[in-house]
Image 1 (tube, rainbow, N blue to C red):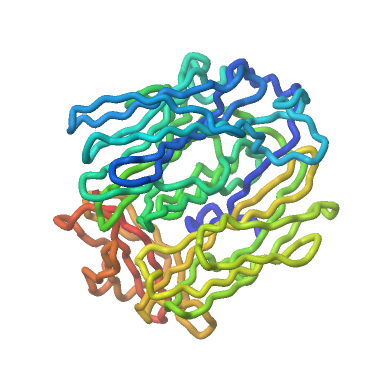
Image 2 (cartoon, rainbow, N blue to C red):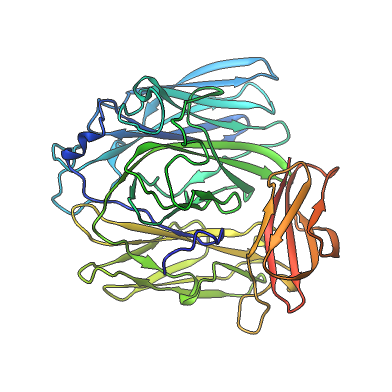
Length: 477
């Protein structure tokens, strides 16, 4: 069940944690900032609740009591600042450890990181297309090996908002960030993004920043898209947010995600997540789970008022490990129950209504966790469900058309010209806009041109003579 890095739609996301002691101080951790992210929720009118997560390495100095949030719009000529206060009860250890294990957060020797949360309500003075909310804090871990002068660089994160034509909630992170990666092991990860408005999301890796529009300097060959040494090179899927890495060097460094939020082709906002990743040798093997019904199927299509149910199976090569399985609960009305030990099976069921029809899929993640001590190991898998009225897109059950994802589209995003490469022979192609209208239907060609169409998200469907189909998201800039 190991992942295949050549398949951009494989979504086995390994969330690896391992035992680590103060002997790990070969990576100097004099400072405390191991990353941050920021998001917002619309309350009413122009009132927004800003939320920040701050990840503190407990070997360093205490987390800040407050964060200074900057709120700016160039087009509206506005510059404001607000104090974000700690949420009572935050500062908890977000690494899962065995009972009785003491980390550096509570006086022990096992590596520990705390998640501190901050909030403030911001009443925007108007509607602007280029709101930016940001904060920075010094300093990054001085033991970072992938960037230059890390102990003198701040961690900077931002969120953007376009409320000129409507209110918006930013994308929300539902999975804790991965912090540890195992040397010479596959790592697939996803942030488990959820958009409360049902908007379409586009993912990308960007440079770690120390201030607005200011990137850190990477040591070659590291870069924003290749932040760690990996064989094969790191791959990142803009459609799913899937990250694949097979690290081949012991390193410490940042990785930064940007998630863009589109509605009917209009960019409504974005968020950043900056995380420090520690790559070390591991001994314990990671637990595993399957995709739908024990297969590699990750995507499904169904009509409203139909019911979808499928099993997620689990396994672990470490015979003494007992596993637990959970999900991130982001699909209202769906159920997820588990049964069996030591390797449980999860049963997901959902009956969507006509109100759930939309062009973008519903995504949820399932996490499989072992009880390895002192720190548990995780893997996170994602599943995608389209609710549609188009009978040609419903491929869920046996006897339906096969769905494949074996084609590559580049450049993507682009200015409107896209080229396709695939090992399959396709005969037809259709292009849909972000609300599901078919805007192009033609014989297959190795490229298409959407130049002149409105910027935003489109979907291309390639159809083979034997009924196999492949769908990918296109982004026209």
